[in-house]
Length: 104
Image (cartoon, rainbow, N blue to C red; front, side):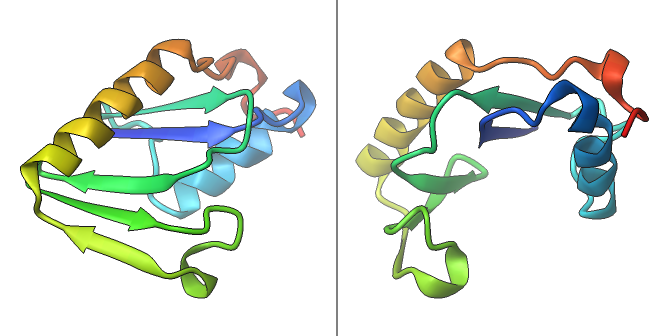
């Protein structure tokens, strides 16, 4: 299952464009195993957990993957910590209002 948590939802009148662009990138459109939610602040850490067996962490979140050092690990404790943090963020995140999809 794929979960994506993104800072700041786009303005309601731009959500359709955002979701359509996400479709071009292969995210979350018509895929029951994928959900997208938005958090209210820019994340201090950007990370991905793969098959609950490895983690990839971008150490400077605002610069993006190409400009930031990163850590790749299979350490169980680090994966568990990141999973718990993600679950906390996910519970507080907002679901997009899909009624606005297609309006841009």
